[in-house]
Amino acid sequence: MKRVIDAIVRFVGWTTIFLLMAALLGLPWKVYGWLGRDIGGYEGAPDVIVMMGGGGIPSESGLMRTWQTAREATRFPRARVLVAHPIEEGESDKSPNPIVKELVLRGVSESRIFREGKGRHTREQADRARELLDGMEDRVRLLIVTSPEHMRRSLLSFKKAGFTHVRGRAVMPQAIEADLSYGGEADATKPSAESLVGHSLMLRYRLWDNLGLTIRVSRELAALAYYRAKGWI
Image 1: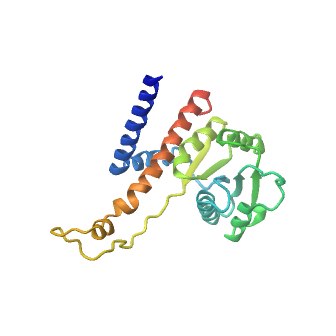
Image 2: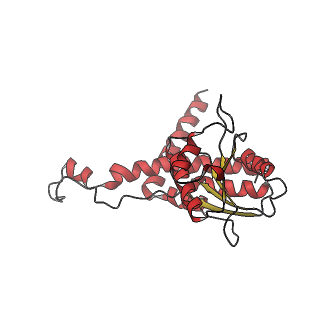
Image 3: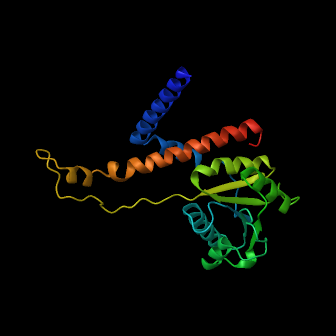
């Protein structure tokens, strides 16, 4: 038992060190960019814009995906908008939905929006979308809108479901360009805690952002491996 506990402690320790080093070096962003790359492609405008449901409204992923979907709907006014998000208890596919309301608020006509509410994960949502577009999967052109870390799995899932014309649009976060340093001029001869922290965006923001991103991309890599093992992509 002692050996098992010792092995677990060592594993946790080395994993923590690895995550900290990866965050300090910014390695998660390279994986993030790879996951968010569009690996689809076709010529012309999409026929259907598919918004992959995030954490609902309001949430970071839900609001960002809704915002990007509304932008794409403006760019492609003839495309229909498919919201792929589980229908909640007491709700129907025709009842008012916060995501639909948000899209309408951002200028998308409700007549263009239809919903897929039975899929509980990406694989099922792709299969349900094929059922909704029965017989059109080899002709209809899809534009998938989702978070960058979720893009690769989404595109591969829709291709596996039989769709041949698929593209992606990742919702990329925008960095603040303003100078966020504080504490006066840094003095190399008499450094203070305020100047060290105030002038280090790595300590204040980037390290924590990178750690959070490390968890997100690690989860997505595990999900990709699971989908591959199940034959879903």
